[in-house]
Each structure stands twice: as structure tokens, then as C-alpha cells.
Image 1 (cartoon, rainbow, N blue to C red):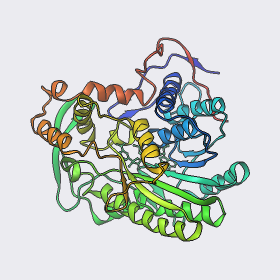
Image 2: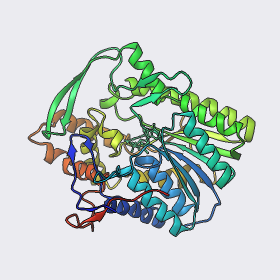
Image 3: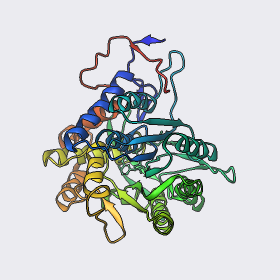
Length: 398
Ligand code: NAD
């Protein structure tokens, strides 16, 4: 037992601790959202969520367990508490999720380790066989800066760089809270291929192949993998940059997986292009925190902003579990970024982007909302949590 008062330790886009009660409240808030948005039903679904502890993956897991009565197996890479050092937010989120799943009467299994490794894939397969039999849905929501290749042992690092020419634009210095210029050198060929090795689709193909080989997929099983495109102002650093190449590779793998699943078990695979939201992964991308601060203000003012749980609710109700199946664009993608990329929103963002400076940051953008949203990710600044009280930080997953 380690009762202690927990205050945030934040520097820039890094927060090195987390508040267990705040994290539990976040899980509860997401569950309440989906409960009022989607009437609860028992589907008997079994779902595997890869990247299940934070951001879009956690929202997927909460929505599936809460409104679809799904048993879930979640894979993630998080740190448990050690002595006075708290666990990571994803660890406490998952702890809270297990309690939630118990109350919902659905099974929750969690595998904490490197999803890129064969070891974790086989542990997951064993667990599926023992506890669930087969799964109906795979959600692929990994965001990682690194992958050790399971077959060659090569250690790949992803980079967020432009391709072809250097890039220079505005960003927020999250430590000084100033709008500054950032210049990023163009990526080398190796950096491009390394980023594809980390964030591309090979790992998902390995997952699906193993799951098929071990008969872990139910007839008609579906796969959905998350991606991002964003507006023109971020293209050079995102969609046309190294990460965009990796996402193109993911799309190609998903298209091949779709063919394989449809032939072998009558299943499908899709990419879902989601909107920009505040997560640990997006905080690390240059330019994106400034972009999100502007985007949220504009989308909030129009009443069309969505957080991960709202996006995922729409993914399930309007696409994956809708009567007619998913609505796809001409490249076979589900588009949840339709509101973010509507002309009225992108035009306004572009206009603000050209004017934004440190002086008008709080007027033209909602930077405080971004900051609060970022602190919320770690369980801080969450409503109805008393932060000067000691809390139990020694909480461990079953
Ligand atoms: P996140 O940082 O909140 O979550 C990443 C998840 O991956 C966590 O559960 C983490 O534990 C897990 N993870 C990382 N490395 C791992 C490893 N080696 N083994 C096992 N688990 C590992 O990220 P997010 O922003 O929710 O991103 C998830 C997906 O959604 C990504 O594909 C991202 O590109 C996509 N997406 C994000 C945004 C956005 O704005 N945040 C927008 C559209 C699409």
C-alpha cells in the first residue's frame, strides 16, 4: 500500500506520473457518454484491442464493453506503480476499466507488454483460446516511437519529419507557452523506411496471420485500424511526411488483410480516419498541439467538436455496427474526420493559423483547453477529484 498526495510532474509534452482517481473518473465519464449515446445491448462480441490503455484504443474498449456488452482483451505497454512512483495513466485507466467491466458483467483480459513482439502475440492468443475462444473484432490503435522487429531483432525508431524539403512553421513551445517557429530537416531514406517499419501495417499483418493460423477469428470477423490525414496546413509534417508514408503502408496492409479475411472467413478490414484529438501521441507531434488549440475553439463554437469517445461512438453506430455496414470513401476508408475537414472549419483554421502569435494565443485559440485536456490524460484537473487528499497509488491489474 502506498497512500500519497499526487501532483502532476509535467514538462512540455511529457508527464511522468498519473493520478489513479482522476484516471478512474475519466474511464467513468467515457462510459457515461457512450451509455447515453447508445442503448446498451448484449451482442456477445469478443474484441481484441491493440493499444487499449489510452486515447482512441481506450475509448474503443470502453464503448465496446459498455454499450455492446463485449468481452475485451486489451494489449498495451504501460508501467505499474513502483514504490512511491505512480503507474502510468494507461496502467491506471486499465485498472479502472477492469472494475468497470466487472460491474458491466463482461470479461476483461489485459496483456501488458510489447505488442510488436511474438511473445506478447502468443500470450494474447493463449488468453483468447482459454478465455474467449475466438474474437469478432480487432481494433488496432497503436502509437509508438519504436519497434523491435520480431524476426530480425532490428531496432526501428520512427521520426516525424517532412519528405523532400525542410519544413518550417509555427508551433507551441509547451514549456514556455509561446508560439515559436520550428524548422525540421527533411527525412533521410532510412528514416522514412524506419518510420514505416514502426507505424506501418506489417505488425497488423503479423497479428492477423497468427490469429488466423491459430483459429482465433470468428467467421465474419472485422478489423479496424486508426489513421489520420488532417488539413493542408499540417500536410507537410504529417500526411506528406514520414508518418503519412507509414499510414499509407498501413492502408495497403489493411487492403490485403481485407482480401485475406474475406476469402478465408468472410471477414473485412478497414482503416478509420479519425479526427485530431488530445492524446499522448498527438502531443508529441510538432505543430499539432497548436493546431488542436485552434481547431477545438472553432469546432466547439460550432457545437461539432468530438473527443475520442464521441468519435468511436460514431464509428460503431454509423459504420461498423450499422445495418448497412461502414460507409467508405473512394479509397475504402471510413471517414470520422468529415467535420474536422469540412470547408467551413478548415478555412477558419487557416485564417487563424496565419494570424496566431504568442500575444493573441489565448484569444484566437483555446490553449487553456488544450492544456487542461493534456493534464486530464494523466488524471489531473479532472472534475470532482480532490487533489490535496492522499490516494492509494499501489493498484495492480489482475
Ligand atoms: P495514445 O498514445 O493515446 O495510445 C497509444 C496506445 O498504444 C497505448 O495504449 C499504448 O500503451 C499503446 N502502445 C504503444 N506502444 C506499444 C507497444 N510497443 N506495445 C503495446 N502497446 C503499445 O495514441 P492515440 O493518439 O490514441 O493513437 C492511436 C491511433 O489513433 C494511432 O494509430 C494514431 O495514429 C491514430 N489517430 C490519432 C489521432 C490523434 O489526434 N490522437 C487522430 C487520428 C488517428
